[in-house]
Amino acid sequence: MEEVTLSLVLKPSLEAMQVFIGRDRLFEVLRQNGLLVGRRRRRIVTTRWSTTCPLKNRKLVTSFRLVNG
Image 1: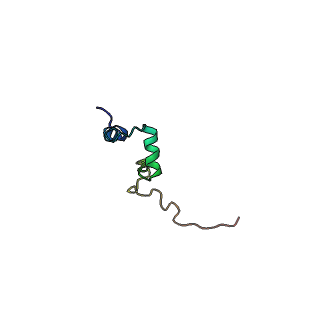
Image 2: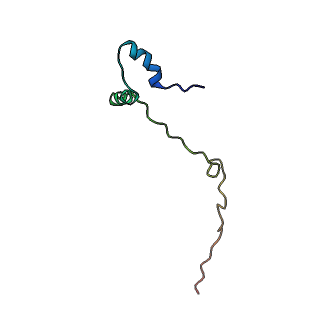
Image 3: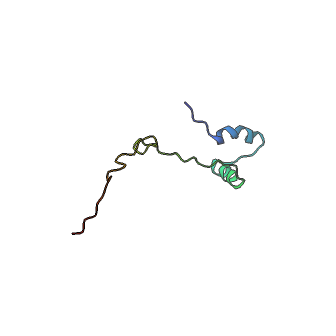
């Protein structure tokens, strides 16, 4: 499967308009004009701290009496 990048998709259109621009300059222009999409942060999903897990050992101490000694 061939990788499709933005610079490869835009290259034929830009060349038709006689605009010759490299990949780095293209992304610099897009960044300056606010046209880049921010990177998506991926949340790491773990099963240990799942919100559906019941809390264990919720009430270990049910009664407590202080003894002076």
